[in-house]
Length: 185
Image 1: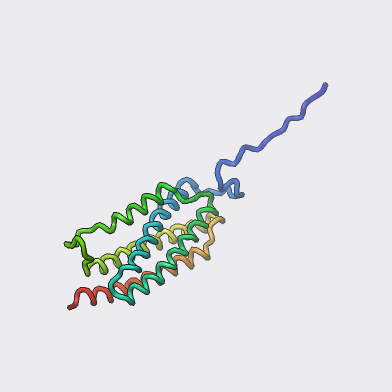
Image 2: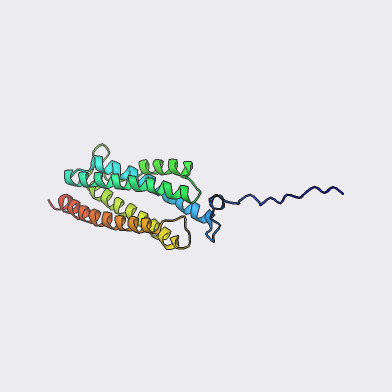
């Protein structure tokens, strides 16, 4: 009797994480969605930093914001690498929506139609503080789960949280400088 040997094939890995050799307990669908939401936020944040660096009415504040813009742009590329490492990529739709949202954010009721209000300088620094706080929160969440997921670099995430803290300190100083220069006559 001639028997044909049976070949047992392993099932195809269900996720990019498994294809990369990781089959841990992380819910990749949730992780990927979280990273894509933060990617959209970082897209809007980078656009806001660049715009404020180019339009802020106080030269030394504009320069400092420009330096921060370079940092947050670098961090965005770090986020792209993290997304790749866990098996996802930025959402094209989320990126476009964030860019549109960033442009719509320029439309604000400041009592002036054709000129820039001095209040804009202050409000935009506040928006940058909110953006960095959101970014910091995202790094903290990833750090909190990094010990359970070898695809996440805990030391890198610690560094990113620390960078965000320093950026918040800098923005705090810039905020008060702007407030004094815009509110005190």
